[in-house]
Amino acid sequence: MTTMAPDAGTQDDAAYEAQFNAAVAAEERIEPRDWMPDAYRASLVRQIAQHAHSEIIGMQPEANWITRAPSLRRKAILMAKVQDEAGHGLYLYSAAETLGTSRDELLDRLHAGRQKYSSIFNYPTLTWADVGAIGWLVDGAAITNQVPLCRCSYGPYARAMVRICKEESFHQRQGYELLLALSKGTEAQHAMAQDAVNRWWWPSLMMFGPPDDESAHSAQSMAWRIKRHSNDELRQRFVDICVPQAESLGLTLPDPDLTWDEERGHYAFGPIDWDEFREVLRGNGPCNEQRINQRRTAHEEGAWVREAATAYATKQAERSRHGYRAPQDQQQGDTQEEDIA
Ligand SMILES: [Fe+2]
Ligand SMILES: [Fe+2]
Image 1: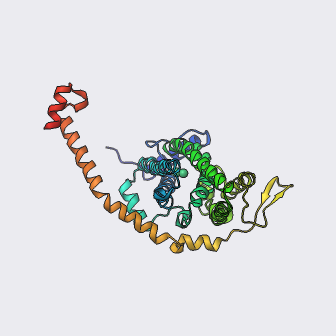
Image 2: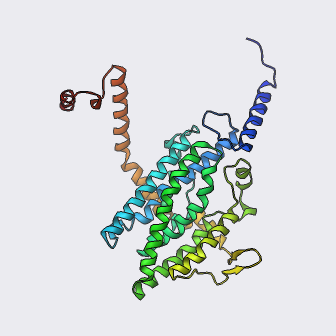
Image 3: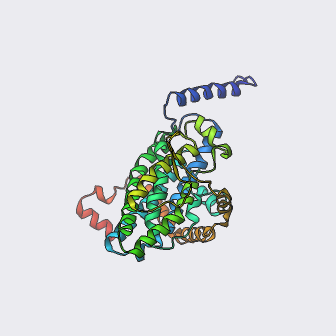
């Protein structure tokens, strides 16, 4: 074995890095087995995990209304939506696992408060209209954020986002339709819809993250083509989409400074209360404690399911090592025998 020159490793890394940068610049996808800078991997794990956590924590505020949905149709829609969010969490944990961090580890980080989820889910759902406001505004903001992620440089994340975005657009539509029904309903229903929009509007704008000049990860993420647009650009796009939609809904947005800026070709909007954002992020939002406690309880109560699934997988692997055929591959008679055994 020859001795490697002291700087050989560094040179190799530099060559790999050049190759990686060229692939990103050429809009090629980076796949799990490709070489990637450690910081790129760490940044993706952080972002994808935070995204996955948001999907599963986000199930809580809306699940709160499943038993109280006003009709069978509304209940079926809401159940489908909450289940979709669980599925989004699963696709995203799987995408994060391709980077070499296990789902268990990511969940541990969430439960220990070492990884965050979107601060929007720390607000309470006070009335049925909140389900509509979340669908229209929160899922709407998520789509605005996530459509560009379908072109993210990391393949598994980009591909997960394609399906997620299709489902998010159903979520946004059902929220809009729910609010429209309330807005056109009785005076009390209209007031309930307006109140929900008043409470969810500002937190939705905060979903895009801090302003560009304060956003710690933005510039590097954009250079790596994980992100395609800055926080402020996406926030502006969302406001521009929502203003005419609010008009069609017959509802107002709670911002006296919201005006069309002819020169910029965008809606101008009032200042965002970043102190509130930071407080919620620090754990002092109205529901932070409740959300994380419920998540931990769900995880503990689900331990037997994980154990059973692992035991089943081990049994299957053992059987296939001994040439056992799975029941579905056998004749019906055999299957029945196996079932009894
Ligand atoms: Fe989702
Ligand atoms: Fe959604």
